[in-house]
Length: 139
Image 1 (cartoon, rainbow, N blue to C red):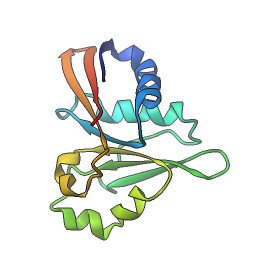
Image 2 (tube, rainbow, N blue to C red):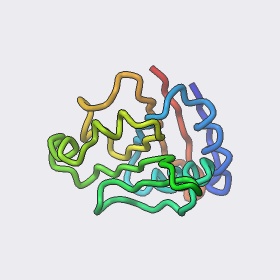
Image 3 (spheres, rainbow, N blue to C red):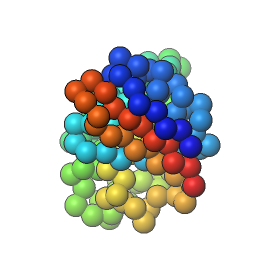
């Protein structure tokens, strides 16, 4: 387990730590709206060496990030607007689970029965304007 309080300007260090400590590549990000889930994903995508800058997939549900050779590195899901788990299945979520890429999932509670048992919970908490805490829960 990793538990850390950090300033927002330390987000890339936190991202590095999370990627290093995670036992697998499925990270479920929990936290209130505006706590910094997408900001953390952006930092992790950058740390992985993606060719593109990450942004929120709120309207498209998923963004793909590749390395310089166009190999998929990570998929970033934002299920906030999802109405039911069937929508995730319709978009091929199970295929993403079978890929070798990292999966960063915002609002994973919307698809809880579809998540693998060994998915890693990343819990973000608002402390102050520029301060957050993060907990990495490993099953």
